Amino acid sequence: MTMAAKLLAAPEEGGYNPLLPHTYELVVGIFSFLVVFFVVGRMLVPRIQKTLAERTDAIEGGIKRAEEAQAEAQALQQQYRDQLAEARHEAARLREEAREQAAQIKAELREQAQAEARRLVEAAHAQIEADRQAAFAQLRAEIGRLSTDLAGRIVGESLEDEARQSRIVDRFLDELESSNAQAVR
Amino acid sequence: MITLTAPAHGDEFGAPTPEELFNLAPVAGVEWFTKPVLLAVISAILVIGLTWAAFSSPKLVPRGVQNVVEYGYMFVRDQVARPFLGKDADRFMGLLVTLFFLVLVWNLLGVVPIAQFPVASHIAFPAVLAISIYVLKIYLGVKHQGAGGYFKNMMFPPGLPKPIYVLLSPIEFLSNMIIAPFTHAVRLFANMFAGHMLLAFFSMVGFHFLFVQLTPLGAPVGVVGVIMTIIFTGFEMFIQFLQAFLFAMLASMYIGGSLHAEH
Image 1 (cartoon, chains in turn cyan, yellow):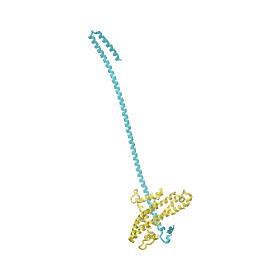
Image 2 (cartoon, helix red, strand yellow):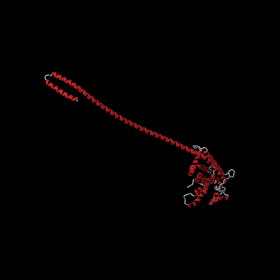
Image 3 (cartoon, chains in turn cyan, red):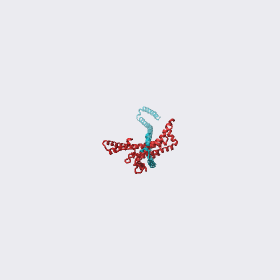
Image 4 (cartoon, one colour):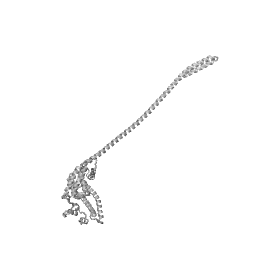
């Protein structure tokens, strides 16, 4: 406090007191401050503030645009991926379907072939039976003719053994009769 | 002080006195037109010119001088305005930029050759700014918190036991209303004053022992003086920047305190 008092009391001693402001310096100080404040603070700073805001907008706009583009690219990629998966799925489905169809066709064909084979076998059997019947009928006629022939010969050539011949013929005819009956049945 | 103020007799070395250093004669015979006044005018023109060159038609992509001054603007905005004013920062950027740039140029003129005088070492200049901030502070405080509210918030912060207010209220009033503006101005003034004295002292040591009175014994002292002058010039530049920053920061703090009640 004594120091301050001494400093404040200094002008009375005629010395220089740095803590006492000069009036003209106060005037020049306030004047220069106001002029600088008016030009810099009131005119120029708002301009740079506007520019800085615009710059922020530009940068944020750029970032936003980039984000949008990226989002779009990702959406497209997702779409492609979905489509690809769908296509794969479809292909798998088609393959499966084709396989099923092939199996079905194979089974049908096999069945058809088996039916055909059966039909053929049956037809063959029928044919054989018919042939047998025909052959039997033919055979019967032939046998009759042969027997008559045979009988004729026997009758014609060996009269001395007539009694034996007639027994043979009788037996033959009996046998023929019985086998004929059997065959017809 | 006695030895420092002893006048130089002939070849004897005498340290510079405050009166020699700061009580300067008028420049062009006009009584009020002294060196600090001239430098204050030059500073104002410099600040306006630089800022005009940078911000008169600012570009979205800054070039040249706009880059430099914009850097200063950003510094004030991010280090001075926003920490204390928050969302109100932009409203007061004009004032704070003016304060910071003006004080910075005032101070830096202390180490610019030929000028070599910090304008703020004459208390009138910091005082003008501090008083302006003081008036603005009270105006904003009364406007935003009401006349009663402003002083009530200042002197009677809530949440303290009643007897404390007997002690606290006078201290708060004194510190906010009287000491704050005083220290605001004196801090800047005293730093520049002392810095200029130091620089003048060391450079005079160098000059005296190397040119005025060159002796085998004195020469090393003169060399030390020159080296110290160089070192202290660098140091002084740092102080000059720091004080400009502090001055603007305190202004920002006072304004912020007036806009919103503290505590």
